[in-house]
Image 1: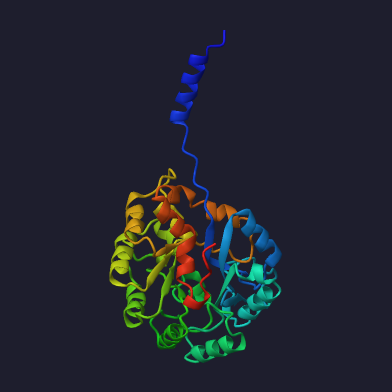
Image 2: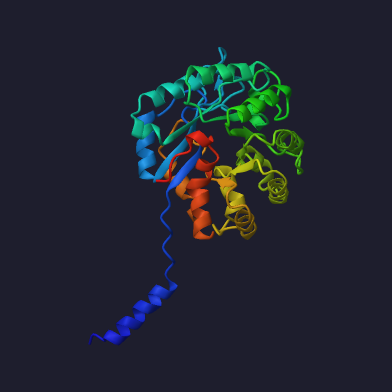
Length: 340
Protein backbone atom coordinates (compact mmCIF):
# COMPACT_ATOMS: atom_id res chain seq x y z
CA UNK A 1 0.00 0.00 0.00
CA UNK A 2 1.35 3.44 -0.97
CA UNK A 3 2.36 5.39 2.15
CA UNK A 4 2.74 9.12 1.53
CA UNK A 5 4.53 9.73 4.84
CA UNK A 6 7.14 7.02 4.16
CA UNK A 7 7.66 8.30 0.63
CA UNK A 8 8.20 11.87 1.85
CA UNK A 9 10.69 10.64 4.47
CA UNK A 10 12.65 8.73 1.82
CA UNK A 11 12.79 11.75 -0.46
CA UNK A 12 14.09 13.92 2.36
CA UNK A 13 16.80 11.37 3.12
CA UNK A 14 17.91 11.27 -0.50
CA UNK A 15 17.96 15.06 -0.66
CA UNK A 16 20.06 15.26 2.50
CA UNK A 17 22.81 12.99 1.16
CA UNK A 18 22.77 14.03 -2.51
CA UNK A 19 25.58 16.38 -3.53
CA UNK A 20 24.73 20.05 -3.96
CA UNK A 21 24.47 20.90 -7.65
CA UNK A 22 27.53 22.77 -8.88
CA UNK A 23 27.12 26.42 -9.72
CA UNK A 24 26.81 27.35 -13.36
CA UNK A 25 29.81 29.44 -14.37
CA UNK A 26 30.68 31.62 -17.30
CA UNK A 27 34.40 31.75 -18.00
CA UNK A 28 37.17 33.84 -19.42
CA UNK A 29 39.98 31.68 -20.76
CA UNK A 30 43.08 33.65 -19.83
CA UNK A 31 45.56 31.43 -21.69
CA UNK A 32 44.77 30.03 -25.15
CA UNK A 33 47.04 29.47 -28.15
CA UNK A 34 45.29 29.69 -31.50
CA UNK A 35 48.04 27.63 -33.16
CA UNK A 36 50.25 24.72 -32.18
CA UNK A 37 54.04 24.41 -32.42
CA UNK A 38 53.72 23.93 -36.20
CA UNK A 39 51.63 27.13 -36.43
CA UNK A 40 48.55 25.09 -37.38
CA UNK A 41 45.04 25.38 -35.94
CA UNK A 42 41.57 23.86 -35.89
CA UNK A 43 40.40 27.30 -36.98
CA UNK A 44 38.22 30.07 -35.68
CA UNK A 45 34.88 28.43 -36.46
CA UNK A 46 35.70 25.42 -34.31
CA UNK A 47 37.05 27.65 -31.56
CA UNK A 48 33.84 29.69 -31.44
CA UNK A 49 31.75 26.52 -31.25
CA UNK A 50 33.90 25.22 -28.40
CA UNK A 51 33.56 28.53 -26.55
CA UNK A 52 29.78 28.48 -26.89
CA UNK A 53 29.61 24.87 -25.75
CA UNK A 54 31.66 25.67 -22.66
CA UNK A 55 30.07 29.00 -21.64
CA UNK A 56 33.40 30.70 -22.34
CA UNK A 57 32.52 34.32 -22.93
CA UNK A 58 36.02 35.72 -23.44
CA UNK A 59 39.40 34.37 -24.53
CA UNK A 60 42.96 35.56 -24.37
CA UNK A 61 44.15 34.47 -27.81
CA UNK A 62 47.79 34.28 -28.87
CA UNK A 63 50.06 32.45 -31.23
CA UNK A 64 53.11 30.49 -30.15
CA UNK A 65 56.41 32.38 -30.39
CA UNK A 66 58.40 29.40 -31.64
CA UNK A 67 57.95 26.90 -34.47
CA UNK A 68 59.14 23.31 -34.48
CA UNK A 69 61.58 22.40 -37.22
CA UNK A 70 61.11 19.25 -39.29
CA UNK A 71 64.76 18.40 -39.65
CA UNK A 72 66.21 17.18 -42.92
CA UNK A 73 67.44 14.02 -41.19
CA UNK A 74 64.05 13.07 -39.72
CA UNK A 75 61.99 10.71 -41.95
CA UNK A 76 58.73 11.40 -40.09
CA UNK A 77 57.26 14.77 -39.20
CA UNK A 78 57.17 15.14 -35.40
CA UNK A 79 53.75 15.56 -33.79
CA UNK A 80 54.89 17.81 -30.93
CA UNK A 81 57.85 20.00 -30.07
CA UNK A 82 59.32 17.19 -27.95
CA UNK A 83 58.80 14.55 -30.64
CA UNK A 84 62.47 14.52 -31.60
CA UNK A 85 65.68 16.48 -31.04
CA UNK A 86 65.16 18.98 -33.86
CA UNK A 87 65.14 22.57 -32.59
CA UNK A 88 62.44 25.19 -32.33
CA UNK A 89 63.06 28.72 -33.58
CA UNK A 90 61.53 32.15 -32.98
CA UNK A 91 58.63 32.73 -35.36
CA UNK A 92 57.23 36.24 -35.75
CA UNK A 93 54.54 35.31 -38.29
CA UNK A 94 52.52 33.67 -35.51
CA UNK A 95 50.99 37.08 -34.79
CA UNK A 96 50.07 37.56 -38.45
CA UNK A 97 48.12 34.27 -38.32
CA UNK A 98 46.22 35.38 -35.21
CA UNK A 99 45.47 38.84 -36.59
CA UNK A 100 44.20 37.43 -39.89
CA UNK A 101 41.85 35.03 -38.09
CA UNK A 102 40.42 37.82 -35.96
CA UNK A 103 39.84 40.11 -38.94
CA UNK A 104 37.51 37.52 -40.46
CA UNK A 105 35.07 37.88 -37.54
CA UNK A 106 32.15 40.25 -37.17
CA UNK A 107 32.17 42.85 -34.40
CA UNK A 108 30.07 40.78 -32.00
CA UNK A 109 32.43 37.84 -32.31
CA UNK A 110 35.55 40.00 -32.16
CA UNK A 111 34.65 41.52 -28.81
CA UNK A 112 35.04 38.07 -27.19
CA UNK A 113 38.73 37.85 -28.14
CA UNK A 114 41.64 39.60 -26.48
CA UNK A 115 44.76 39.08 -28.60
CA UNK A 116 48.22 39.04 -27.04
CA UNK A 117 51.25 39.62 -29.25
CA UNK A 118 53.94 36.97 -28.79
CA UNK A 119 56.04 36.64 -31.96
CA UNK A 120 59.34 38.15 -30.89
CA UNK A 121 62.70 36.92 -29.63
CA UNK A 122 63.04 37.78 -25.92
CA UNK A 123 66.84 37.69 -26.26
CA UNK A 124 66.87 40.42 -28.91
CA UNK A 125 67.17 44.02 -27.76
CA UNK A 126 65.33 44.94 -30.96
CA UNK A 127 62.21 43.18 -29.63
CA UNK A 128 60.62 46.35 -28.26
CA UNK A 129 61.05 48.10 -31.63
CA UNK A 130 59.41 45.14 -33.38
CA UNK A 131 56.48 45.20 -30.93
CA UNK A 132 56.05 48.93 -31.46
CA UNK A 133 55.85 48.37 -35.23
CA UNK A 134 53.22 45.68 -34.76
CA UNK A 135 51.16 47.97 -32.54
CA UNK A 136 51.38 50.72 -35.16
CA UNK A 137 50.35 48.37 -37.97
CA UNK A 138 47.11 47.39 -36.22
CA UNK A 139 46.11 50.18 -33.84
CA UNK A 140 43.87 48.92 -31.04
CA UNK A 141 44.18 45.25 -31.97
CA UNK A 142 46.66 43.92 -29.41
CA UNK A 143 45.62 43.89 -25.76
CA UNK A 144 48.65 42.25 -24.15
CA UNK A 145 52.03 40.64 -24.68
CA UNK A 146 52.78 36.94 -24.39
CA UNK A 147 52.97 34.16 -23.67
CA UNK A 148 56.66 35.10 -23.50
CA UNK A 149 58.83 31.99 -23.24
CA UNK A 150 61.82 32.26 -20.92
CA UNK A 151 62.69 29.29 -18.68
CA UNK A 152 60.56 26.51 -20.18
CA UNK A 153 62.29 23.14 -19.56
CA UNK A 154 62.40 21.15 -22.82
CA UNK A 155 61.29 24.11 -24.97
CA UNK A 156 64.28 26.01 -23.62
CA UNK A 157 66.58 23.09 -24.32
CA UNK A 158 65.41 22.91 -27.95
CA UNK A 159 65.31 26.64 -28.71
CA UNK A 160 68.00 27.86 -31.06
CA UNK A 161 70.18 30.50 -29.43
CA UNK A 162 70.67 31.54 -25.83
CA UNK A 163 68.27 30.78 -22.98
CA UNK A 164 66.02 33.80 -22.35
CA UNK A 165 65.75 35.08 -18.78
CA UNK A 166 62.82 37.03 -17.39
CA UNK A 167 65.19 39.77 -16.20
CA UNK A 168 67.43 40.17 -19.25
CA UNK A 169 68.03 43.52 -20.92
CA UNK A 170 65.87 42.79 -23.97
CA UNK A 171 62.83 42.04 -21.83
CA UNK A 172 63.51 45.04 -19.62
CA UNK A 173 62.90 47.16 -22.72
CA UNK A 174 59.73 45.17 -23.49
CA UNK A 175 58.36 45.70 -19.97
CA UNK A 176 58.86 49.46 -20.25
CA UNK A 177 56.95 49.42 -23.52
CA UNK A 178 54.18 47.34 -21.93
CA UNK A 179 53.76 49.95 -19.20
CA UNK A 180 53.72 52.73 -21.80
CA UNK A 181 50.85 51.08 -23.71
CA UNK A 182 49.07 49.69 -20.61
CA UNK A 183 49.54 46.10 -21.83
CA UNK A 184 49.62 43.14 -19.43
CA UNK A 185 52.49 40.70 -19.91
CA UNK A 186 52.00 36.92 -19.72
CA UNK A 187 55.35 35.44 -18.79
CA UNK A 188 56.38 31.78 -18.76
CA UNK A 189 59.28 31.59 -16.33
CA UNK A 190 59.74 28.25 -14.61
CA UNK A 191 60.35 28.59 -10.91
CA UNK A 192 62.96 25.83 -10.93
CA UNK A 193 64.63 23.13 -13.02
CA UNK A 194 63.60 19.51 -13.31
CA UNK A 195 65.78 18.35 -10.43
CA UNK A 196 66.30 21.27 -8.07
CA UNK A 197 63.84 21.17 -5.17
CA UNK A 198 64.09 24.89 -4.49
CA UNK A 199 62.98 28.06 -6.33
CA UNK A 200 66.15 28.13 -8.42
CA UNK A 201 65.04 30.74 -10.98
CA UNK A 202 62.75 32.83 -8.79
CA UNK A 203 65.15 35.77 -8.65
CA UNK A 204 64.75 36.34 -12.40
CA UNK A 205 61.00 36.82 -12.05
CA UNK A 206 61.20 38.75 -8.81
CA UNK A 207 63.68 41.27 -10.16
CA UNK A 208 61.28 41.98 -13.02
CA UNK A 209 58.36 42.46 -10.64
CA UNK A 210 60.38 44.75 -8.41
CA UNK A 211 61.91 46.88 -11.18
CA UNK A 212 58.68 47.30 -13.20
CA UNK A 213 55.93 48.15 -10.70
CA UNK A 214 53.80 49.77 -13.42
CA UNK A 215 53.74 46.64 -15.58
CA UNK A 216 51.10 43.98 -14.87
CA UNK A 217 52.58 40.47 -15.01
CA UNK A 218 50.53 37.30 -15.46
CA UNK A 219 52.73 34.41 -14.32
CA UNK A 220 51.87 31.43 -16.53
CA UNK A 221 51.09 28.33 -14.43
CA UNK A 222 52.73 30.07 -11.43
CA UNK A 223 56.08 28.84 -12.74
CA UNK A 224 55.12 25.17 -13.02
CA UNK A 225 55.05 22.83 -15.99
CA UNK A 226 54.10 19.24 -16.69
CA UNK A 227 57.75 18.41 -17.28
CA UNK A 228 58.65 19.66 -13.78
CA UNK A 229 55.90 17.49 -12.33
CA UNK A 230 57.15 14.41 -14.17
CA UNK A 231 60.38 14.72 -12.22
CA UNK A 232 59.21 16.21 -8.92
CA UNK A 233 55.45 15.49 -8.77
CA UNK A 234 54.71 18.46 -6.54
CA UNK A 235 56.73 21.56 -5.67
CA UNK A 236 56.25 21.88 -1.94
CA UNK A 237 57.75 25.37 -1.89
CA UNK A 238 55.32 26.75 -4.49
CA UNK A 239 52.47 27.80 -2.20
CA UNK A 240 54.54 29.81 0.30
CA UNK A 241 56.49 31.38 -2.56
CA UNK A 242 53.37 32.49 -4.44
CA UNK A 243 51.85 33.75 -1.19
CA UNK A 244 54.87 35.94 -0.43
CA UNK A 245 55.09 37.28 -3.97
CA UNK A 246 51.42 38.31 -3.97
CA UNK A 247 51.92 40.08 -0.65
CA UNK A 248 55.01 41.90 -1.91
CA UNK A 249 54.05 42.79 -5.51
CA UNK A 250 50.69 44.26 -6.42
CA UNK A 251 51.54 43.94 -10.14
CA UNK A 252 51.57 40.11 -10.08
CA UNK A 253 48.67 37.95 -11.27
CA UNK A 254 48.54 34.15 -11.36
CA UNK A 255 47.40 32.06 -14.33
CA UNK A 256 45.88 28.86 -12.91
CA UNK A 257 46.07 26.92 -16.15
CA UNK A 258 46.09 23.15 -16.35
CA UNK A 259 49.40 22.27 -14.65
CA UNK A 260 48.10 24.02 -11.53
CA UNK A 261 44.88 22.02 -11.28
CA UNK A 262 46.65 18.92 -9.99
CA UNK A 263 48.46 18.46 -7.71
CA UNK A 264 47.91 21.95 -6.26
CA UNK A 265 44.27 23.04 -6.45
CA UNK A 266 42.83 19.52 -6.23
CA UNK A 267 44.33 16.53 -4.42
CA UNK A 268 44.41 12.94 -5.71
CA UNK A 269 40.87 12.38 -4.48
CA UNK A 270 39.67 15.47 -6.36
CA UNK A 271 39.14 17.49 -3.16
CA UNK A 272 40.03 21.21 -3.10
CA UNK A 273 43.21 22.16 -1.30
CA UNK A 274 42.34 24.30 1.73
CA UNK A 275 45.58 26.30 1.69
CA UNK A 276 45.16 27.35 -1.94
CA UNK A 277 41.54 28.23 -1.24
CA UNK A 278 42.65 30.43 1.64
CA UNK A 279 45.29 32.13 -0.51
CA UNK A 280 42.79 32.97 -3.23
CA UNK A 281 40.30 34.28 -0.67
CA UNK A 282 43.07 36.55 0.63
CA UNK A 283 43.86 37.80 -2.91
CA UNK A 284 40.51 37.44 -4.71
CA UNK A 285 41.37 39.62 -7.72
CA UNK A 286 44.78 38.14 -8.56
CA UNK A 287 43.95 34.69 -9.97
CA UNK A 288 42.50 33.65 -13.33
CA UNK A 289 41.80 30.42 -15.22
CA UNK A 290 43.34 29.27 -18.47
CA UNK A 291 43.10 26.21 -20.68
CA UNK A 292 46.53 26.56 -22.35
CA UNK A 293 45.24 24.61 -25.36
CA UNK A 294 47.48 24.76 -28.42
CA UNK A 295 45.59 24.97 -31.69
CA UNK A 296 43.12 22.13 -30.91
CA UNK A 297 39.79 22.95 -29.31
CA UNK A 298 37.91 19.66 -28.87
CA UNK A 299 38.56 19.56 -25.11
CA UNK A 300 38.34 23.28 -24.40
CA UNK A 301 35.01 23.20 -22.52
CA UNK A 302 35.99 20.12 -20.55
CA UNK A 303 39.29 21.70 -19.56
CA UNK A 304 37.66 24.83 -18.18
CA UNK A 305 34.93 22.94 -16.32
CA UNK A 306 37.57 20.77 -14.65
CA UNK A 307 38.14 23.73 -12.31
CA UNK A 308 34.53 23.69 -11.08
CA UNK A 309 35.12 21.54 -7.97
CA UNK A 310 37.72 24.04 -6.81
CA UNK A 311 35.59 27.05 -7.71
CA UNK A 312 32.62 25.56 -5.86
CA UNK A 313 34.66 25.53 -2.65
CA UNK A 314 35.25 29.29 -2.86
CA UNK A 315 32.70 31.92 -1.83
CA UNK A 316 30.52 32.39 -4.88
CA UNK A 317 31.45 36.01 -5.49
CA UNK A 318 35.17 35.14 -5.49
CA UNK A 319 34.63 32.05 -7.64
CA UNK A 320 32.98 34.15 -10.33
CA UNK A 321 35.87 36.62 -10.25
CA UNK A 322 38.38 33.83 -10.76
CA UNK A 323 36.28 32.14 -13.45
CA UNK A 324 35.59 35.23 -15.54
CA UNK A 325 36.14 38.75 -14.25
CA UNK A 326 39.75 38.87 -13.07
CA UNK A 327 41.18 38.31 -16.52
CA UNK A 328 39.01 41.06 -18.00
CA UNK A 329 40.08 43.46 -15.27
CA UNK A 330 43.78 43.03 -16.09
CA UNK A 331 43.33 44.11 -19.73
CA UNK A 332 44.18 47.65 -20.92
CA UNK A 333 41.77 50.07 -19.31
CA UNK A 334 40.47 51.37 -22.65
CA UNK A 335 39.75 47.85 -23.92
CA UNK A 336 38.07 46.18 -20.96
CA UNK A 337 34.66 44.82 -21.94
CA UNK A 338 31.62 46.33 -20.31
CA UNK A 339 29.93 44.02 -17.85
CA UNK A 340 27.59 41.70 -19.72
